[in-house]
Image 1 (spheres, rainbow over the protein chains, first blue to last red):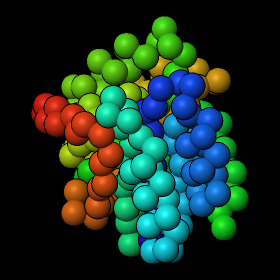
Image 2 (cartoon, one colour):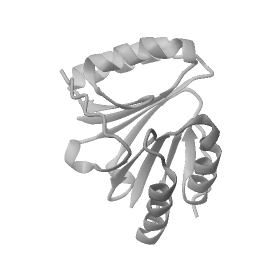
Image 3 (cartoon, rainbow over the protein chains, first blue to last red):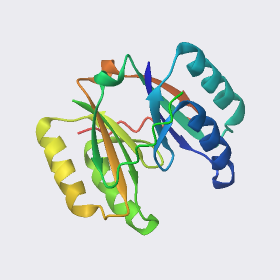
Image 4 (cartoon, rainbow over the protein chains, first blue to last red):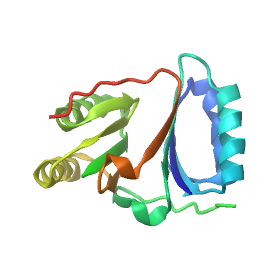
Length: 85
Length: 85
């Protein structure tokens, strides 16, 4: 599946989630990651987030069958950090 | 069409884009908006963004045929500000 992940965490807690997301996804913008993941990777990531995030914080994951289901328009420099595992 | 819009702008410039996005979309998280828009609304919004954003800033718009093409998982409080025009 293809996912877009956006987070809004306390600033002193973002480096940890950034590091975790970077294992599975490509960083696209401040607080925004994208990538193709397996069911197992998705489970690992969401389990970790569920444990990590605090009540005042939010994380949203948008999920699609595959990358072709989503079209993208980018304003500004496109970060193409395709370090997808 | 259904869109997800994420922006990363200089902090003193976010209130203006927030206000603009709120005309067409629902605010879902810091720097994240979603909503169903017509072709004409999409054109108006993207033309405005194209004019407004600066080189060091980024805005990404993800576009889908409709809301059913995307599944969503939300961690934390869900803002359901459905002020879609």
